[in-house]
Amino acid sequence: MLKFLSQFGRYVLLLKKVFSRPEKSVIYYKQVMHELVYLGLNSVGIITIISFFMGAVITLQTAYNTENPIYPKYLIGLGCRDSIILEFSSTVAALILAGKVGSNIASEIGTMRVTEQIDALEIMGVNSASYLILPKIIATLVFNPFLTLISICVGVLGGYVVGTASGVITTQDYIYGIQYAFIPYYVTYSLIKTLFFAFIITSVSAFQGYYVEGGSLEVGRASTKAVVFSSVLILLFNVILTQLLLS
Picture 1 (cartoon, helix red, strand yellow):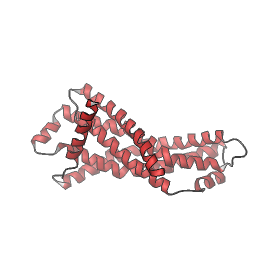
Picture 2: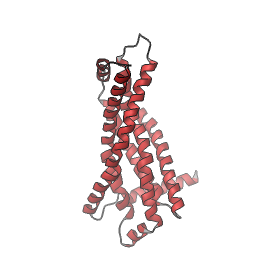
Picture 3: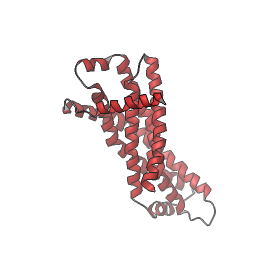
């Protein structure tokens, strides 16, 4: 418990340094643009692939579990739509990004720590925490909602392609299902969760990398911790936000 409180205190103090006033806004702008490409744009491919197959599996599973003739076929499209919007495109995508983006952030900053690049920044009078971490947080907060929207669209498309190709549902029924009783707030709910998850992934991973002590072995361990802790916190906040936003 004492170790947890100590680590949490270091995390809070790090965030205080991160959100302090930047020295030169122009430099931060360039860093944010770089991180938007590195952390955001480069993640579009994996999110697209996973979302397509995710929508396909949800459609097939829903179809095979609603074979009773009393269930109308359009429920397959409805179930796919709501599952993707409410849970999969925000939470599952965040867990994937925790593995991809989180490990990259932790290893990048951890390597800079063990090679004393962060110490060099501090000697030059640069707020290293803000310079290295703040652009990453801004980039993920800006771009991750777009990744979620892409995931929703591709997931629904994947369900349609596989559902109609396998013959479990017709085009008319699927389209009617994804339009039936649509609640726009569900998309807002998903985007709100995405913002929290983006902050968790970036800040926790950066924290693990920033305080690495040792050599390359410790950098690897920090990357593993970043993914594990981020994933656990994502699942925890998923429960909390669902209770707060949907109750």
